[in-house]
Image (tube, rainbow, N blue to C red; front, top):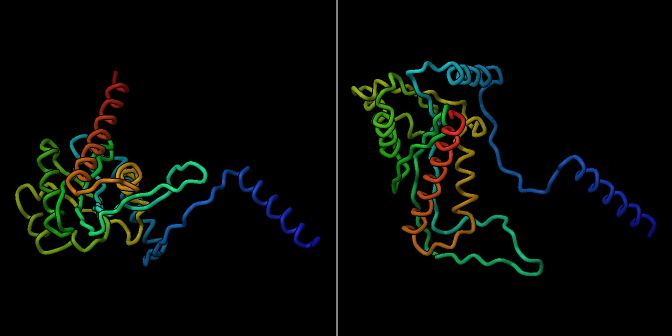
Length: 229
């Protein structure tokens, strides 16, 4: 009996110590180690950091990535009254849509395109959209991960066109999502729109996705105006 009491005291003391240092209970995320050497990884990340922090005024840099939108909601932590469990209805038959997005390193603004497939065509459509949004930029630097759709024959041919020659692709080291700034935006999108959502059809869900992204861009633009004023 004494032994059990001692264990309880030890656990309580440990819990108190963890709270004092700001620790919390959460869900660990699975990760895959980068296959590059530490030196090679650091060199590439430093080169990208230098590019972003020393960007000429007539050039633009964006972080690019894709995100999956599922009609069946992502189930995650949510606020609930004690003794009651929140229910999230699911349509059952899942549907998917995909976004390819590019986040401006200066403004944080997001450019995106939508598609029913996550393929090279989706990525090429985003590249074209970037050339139209940044018509005055002499060079558009696109920081990408190592997903296969970013390096296909169709993409290489697109980069040889008149508009494509303004684009420069900069691959991140493999399996380094924390170094891709846009990943945080996708996490916020899931937290605010797709997690525990109650949309019955994909049309409504995508309208909610677009509305949230537009509000985000508007909020950032307003903040920039306030700072400039």
